[in-house]
Length: 111
Image (cartoon, rainbow, N blue to C red):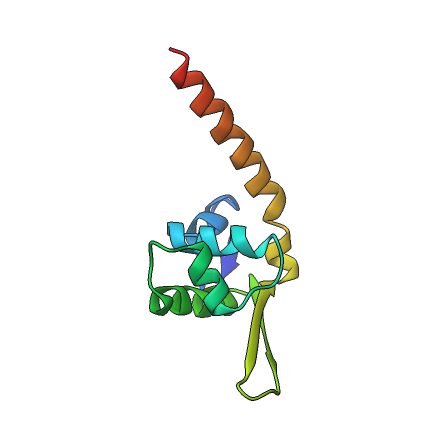
């Protein structure tokens, strides 16, 4: 039995499913796996959503300790988002998922 933020899990594999409960969080983490980015840069890389949605998802990912938010004391303020140590642990999983997706696409297109 595992407990995260007061929620109990009988299987550890359910934890990342709950943490990455929508495609926007996944896409944000995938893009941050390439390096730290500003909100506006994420919005350019994920054009089919709004900055407001990205901002809300970033906050949720920060609250889950999957990303870090670093504010630089400049005018205007510079804010960079990057993967935390926990978020970096997901990169290997993302790479396996990407490989699976490529194989799946090739397989069904050859039928």
